[in-house]
Amino acid sequence: MIKNISFSNFYSFYEETLVSFEVSQKPSKSLYDINIENNRLNKVVSVIGANGSGKTGLIRPFAFIGWFISNSYIELKPDDLIPYHPHSFYKDNNTTFSINFILAGIEYKYNLTLNKSQVLHESLYEKTSKLFSYIFIRERNSIDEEFEYKQKNFDFQVKIANKMKDNASIISAAFMNDSEDAKKFIDFFGKSFVFNVTLSGRENYSEQGLIDSAKYFKQNSKSLEQMIKIICELDLGLNSVELDEVEIKTPEGQLEKIYLPIGVHGENEKQFKLPFFEESSGTKSLFVLLRRLLPVLQSGGLAIIDEIDNDLHPHMLPVILELFKFEHTNPKNAQIIFTCNTPEVLNILKKHQVYLVEKTDLHSEAWRLDEMSGIRVDDNLYAKYYAGALGATPNI
Image 1 (cartoon, one colour):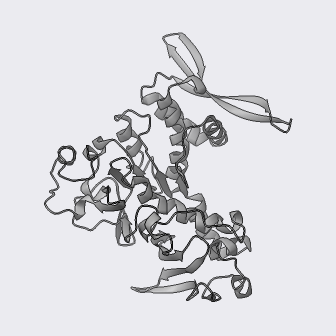
Image 2 (cartoon, helix red, strand yellow; image 1 turned 90 degrees about the vertical axis):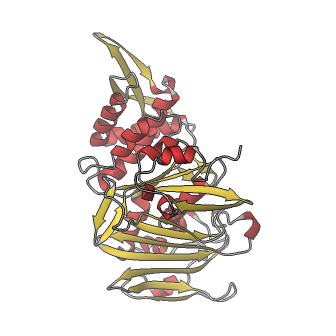
């Protein structure tokens, strides 16, 4: 589970910015609470702000760290640039990250400092008492110096670590060299982090997304059953969803089996079937969204979703978020952080579960509602936001 992440000089955020799932004991209890190892954490965090304010930039660090730790060694060639953008005004400055997370009852801290071409510092710590003890530290004091690497209780050969390429993670490299210690972190960041945010922003709808989602549901009967139940309950005019197997010819001329989602519509004894390619944008978006959320809910982890309300009616958002509330739909205490353009979310969540984002002079800043003075627990946050009392609204 995620406790918090801090970062600087990442996209439109230059100053150090903190995004925290931590909750003090003071706020009133919520069904979106997690209580573990003397920590009270949020299951759900929402990000609201005007278009272009930096909402996507606030959740993107989670996706970037998840990718960097798990895939950078595999996907990057030695001379490749690291795929992110520092703030356009500070391209020559370093970018930093620090993320605290709990895995198998142990709290860890991962630190990373880098620029577009190389890692300058990477370290992993575990909390052994009130203090943290290092697992490994890899750093260089200047761009021209060699890395200094040391480790403790981490099964990765030092001679390999010392020859690491400059643009990849030690954890990613250790995993590719059969490190069992690295595997648990790869499983956490690589398999438990699900996101729809890429280098260029949110992944837009594509027909391939429908096909990939149908393949997942065909292979996971529990998720298929849940998906059908949720879609049919949300009054989309569907009685069921079927997955039809068809053969297509690949560009190489080979035959390949794929699955096409089919919507079953009916009234009384009459029914007809409609391929999902002909269904509404909302139906298709919900189908792909559930493919991302249901695996996280079943196995635990973090869903990082940009514009969760895209093409969806505002009344659907509470139903989707309620999946994270209860033990029968969220047995592993999965978490979600999402951006949205639906202020009605302020009627669903409490002030410690909402971040607002604003951009001034091309610099983004973010704050959690419980950090603002003068906001009471019983305040109508929706009304205050619409009145402009909370900020983070379009300047029109």
